[in-house]
Amino acid sequence: MKISKQEQSASRWVHDYSESLYGFAVQRVRDDHLAKDLVQETFLAAWRNVDNYSGEASVKTWLFTILKNKIIDHYRKASTRLSVDLHSIETAPDISFDDADHWDKDAYPADWGVDYNSQMESKEFFTVLDKCRRRLKEIQNAVFSLKYLEGYNSDEICKVLQISSSNYWVLVHRAKTQLRACLEKNWFVR
Amino acid sequence: MGITCKQATDYILKKEEGRLTLRQRYHLWRHLAVCIFCRLFQKQNKLINASLKQHGTHDHLDEEFKETVIKAMNDDSGTEKEPGGL
Image 1 (cartoon, rainbow over the protein chains, first blue to last red):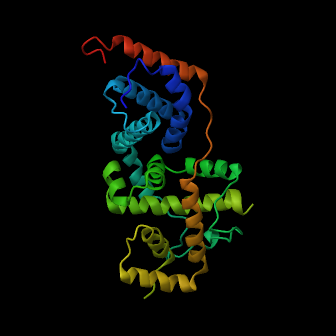
Image 2: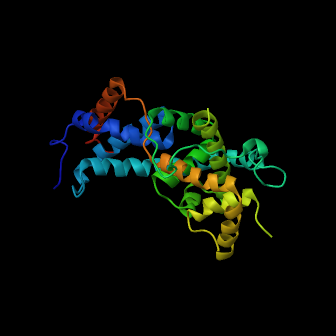
């Protein structure tokens, strides 16, 4: 069913969908202002094209599809800026491992005493996770968002961020060991 | 010759995407059989992955922002008929 601007109201759209679109965006780009910009651009793009909208999907689904494309575009455009951190990530000493590339004695993983197959429910845990993620470089968080929220594989992520496969695996490895250590220190073993 | 913990943790991450050769899978299996720390890393990594897929918390949008968007959309409608106005 086709819809037209006459049948829609801008305030209704914003009232119904802005919070969920913003939640979706901020979780991915991890920047309040950028997330708001993307949400606004999404509404405007949809509003301009509402007369061409086929109506096959719900307005909500359509808005989310537009937003998702805008987020991927953002990463694509930001890839040059983001990759500036590649060198510092790759050359920084990896404190989790010793000279022989085994776990450093100060970084031995400890048992967290939880069911590792369960899902974390605590709001406080996600606050700590968020704090730990803020210590990562933007490009590492971009990789996490694309990998775990969009379900992209490494080839697709390398293409969006314009990085090599070896860059990708170093980024992920460093990010994971750093995140693990941070969670252990600030949440599990206190 | 066995693999190091650094290699083993790298293999654990690559295994998620099915990127290990048969030989690498064998080396990882042998390493995990004797290394409690890498076994813990593997379990903790699984929990971290699940957490990264979950929705975190975020602040609500302020009304001022919503009003700005509504105004921008309505203003946009006004310029729509003018060529190049979009």
